[in-house]
Amino acid sequence: MKVKLWLRVENNSKFVRGKGKARQEIEQSVLSRFAMEKPDKKGWEYALSIPYSTDEELDRIIYEEIYAEAERMADLRNCFIKADMVSVDDSGRSW
Image (cartoon, rainbow, N blue to C red; front, side, top):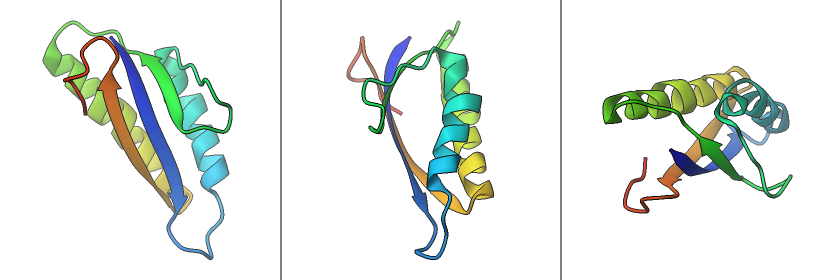
């Protein structure tokens, strides 16, 4: 399934620095596994291709392999994420 991901990484406080490195790690370790395309190098939008067999598997991949991993990596650098995902083919499906 082709999806569009909007992902924003922010620092937990103004005294913390690391959102750039956290975002880079998320792109390299998590999003690259899903044929990541990034139209704007500095933008927050990504195009991903997620292979799946059932809707349950798709939900598991999105929530556990993408969102949870991205949140964990951001947390290691004292950051947090805001994310939304929508299907390219079926705009009624979003996560």
